[in-house]
Image: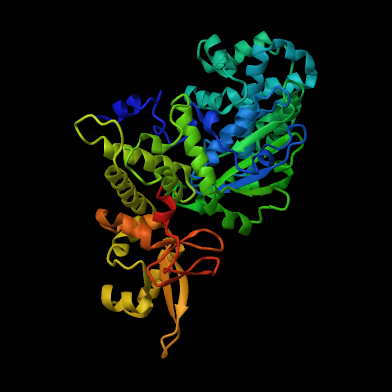
Length: 516
């Protein structure tokens, strides 16, 4: 039985778990679940404001960015949306503000030419100076692009539909021909240019702000109420993927310049990895002037998101992951996926896909997924995710089986190193988010012992034999009666991050939570 044949047999019109990158998901609008603050992110196009959205990887930043782009198509409040997410050529540097403004001016110039080429009557709304600026911008910013750069730019210009592609096809796919053809159609070729404007365009440092400002004004005379610049993927280059500081440096010159991010007629929307937040604060990013949002998902929202996704790919026939399970499975796997993804829609999708992959390893045809396949899939994904998140410390984390632990026991019984050396290890594990200090216990002689526990149940599952997965869910993940989070630990009494004591006796376990 193949994965694809199972998906088809269960009534799906496509694989609901094929992609975890929102830019590749064609049905995103059908199952997008907006966070409570999403209307604030979009704001009011006729009075645009800047904002920053911080979220963990896989938390849905790019999905939100895409839906902002979709919002620009609203005919009642249209805005020109520029996707500024291609940073590979700048990676490893701290580009000055002028470099960013030049890149944005390129994209706006292309958008304006494509719009005017498709709707040439719009040229009547531009005065003589506007036309001069547009001509100089096209010559200065676009003519130097090679074919690959031009095509990337076309893909970054949102809310103009296929107009950029049509512009490209119409003039034969040659950059110079595209520019010349568009300007000739619009009557810009015959316009004489003031010498000072041409000279200014040649001075990158002084011209960047001027042309950026002028192009924003021109866009406002056409079909758009404002320009939205969405910044994403700063941490997805070779030089920044593991270095939050390097990722922040890519946009430092832009995000710290209030005159630019608060420019009239422009809304800058920064979609950033949450690891950049402390760096941004330290660098002086003005979150009192740039509205800050932090993206997080509740279990209920994640469950809703998964249900909507399944329905979108099955024409409503599948409403829950439980619908593809064998009838005798008494686990609410749909809910369990929402709990075990730790706020990451991407991890939820990957885990669901892993379960189906495990179920379809058999050569014989199957109609539904067994409970055994569910546990295998969760166990395998737990091992994969642990390795991804904590590869540097994985071998150490697998040397002991305790879920809750103290320094001296690990130092003497497991690692056979000094307590100080063990504390250094524990601090490293804490710094990467693998563990947390849960409480302290007095030993009657020395200073209190620190009791640590894991922060992610998937790490515990990865270190556990497959046969004990349910035991872990039933004994080491207990619900806090105050904040309703599930607390991880193996002691008789656990301490939640909200400082509530959670006794094992009588506590509601995660297994009980998901047992139907």
